[in-house]
Amino acid sequence: MLQVYHNPRCKISSSVVSELHKHGLEFEIIEYLKKIPSVDELKALLNKLHLKPFEIVRKNEKIFKEKFKGKKFTDDEWIIILREYPILIERPIVVRKNKAIICRPPERIEEII
Image (cartoon, rainbow, N blue to C red; front, top):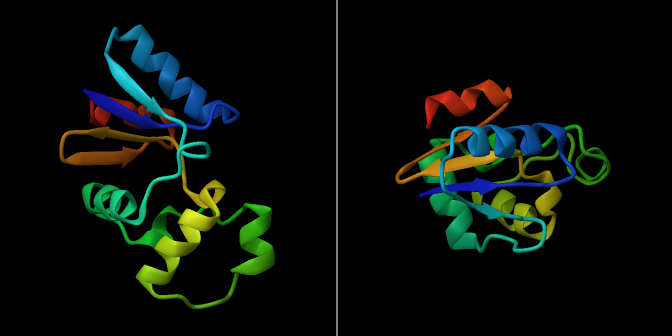
């Protein structure tokens, strides 16, 4: 079954969820702002994405610009930051078994379904 790390206030994230419904696929929605992934879950997700923590940081978020822009952190420190400020996690992320992608643009959903 697919999993979607989703923010319902995000237009692109909602578009991906709608596309999955259109395809008639079963999927689990994870509202990661309400159910914040653990450190281990974030590490597993990053492994499936084949990305470093900084590569999934939303750099246009106000909190990033105010607290983190221009500063250097280790991967482990970024994971802690992402747990503390989950709004910084790029979305939507769609997971299928051992593969995950960030669906930006939303058409990337085709790569995983």
